Length: 443
Image (cartoon, rainbow, N blue to C red; front, side):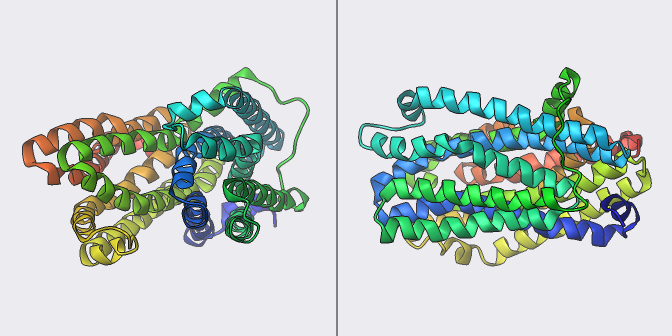
């Protein structure tokens, strides 16, 4: 039985779970993998080197956002084509997405390498940290294309019915990155260069693991010569835009939070938020994993016009997101200090501030999952405008006014309410819109 037959006939709950766990584990490993470099550098090289690596980390976000943008846009069209049993179009979409991403990323990397010093100082480097930024960033950029290839391949392989291999590739990268960081930094004393080499080598091997999918009998990922079409390029970028907004808005939100906490609560407030944000970064990626598990199977069923199964998948996704959100919220209310105790170097005042704040902050997870599921669902059925609006509402349109107004009216503690307020209002607006326009999820 082919992958397409299995998707169309398999019961929906087992089908969804077969995509859910690999997607969530994969996204979790991606978020943890970014933090590993900083942990090893801080213990093995020193605080100045750590500052240099942290300044360079946003480059990962830029590369990730591009691979998500093109990868999710292309993968949606790919799965829809498979659902319509149009394999020729699926092959063209995969080739187009891969080549387009390579062109965009290579141009970006060349531009960054030619302006490395200026870029480093824009990102916050100074005379003491720049040597470390340059040492780390030069190697990362030189081989950065492999990072985007690995991410794009994992997305398409998941859409080609092989979520376990997509997860295996990311596990390989994560484990190797830890082992090689230890080897290069603590055994061979390569310093920041060793950290960058560990990241690059582990990513290349992880991408190589993913390439085994091309030798799989059921694989539909094939490169073709005739693939270019301007209309498809526009569609890939349009459909993938919500995924780009998710990743790109993270940096904006962190900056706005930091400025606000600094204004109202000083350095302690910024440190307390940093503790919460480390946990939030991991949880956000896991919620994103729920949406990524839905996307391949929803897009396929939408292409096959199996709309009853499409609607049923949405309901399963919402229930899963709600359950996950409630579990996190309850855990935060019951055990906030234990969660913040992970950051052992913080003072009691800072830890207490972070613990109290996380209780309010975590309520937002009840609604975050709903918003991510609906956005990914609309993206998967080519209703990109709705998906884009959901992402803009929760990250900019509602978030920014709430961050400004809440502490003015209710005091500094209300800064923590911004996330749950923005997410809850977004969720209410989605349900209101769907109730008024029920056909939007069934056509």
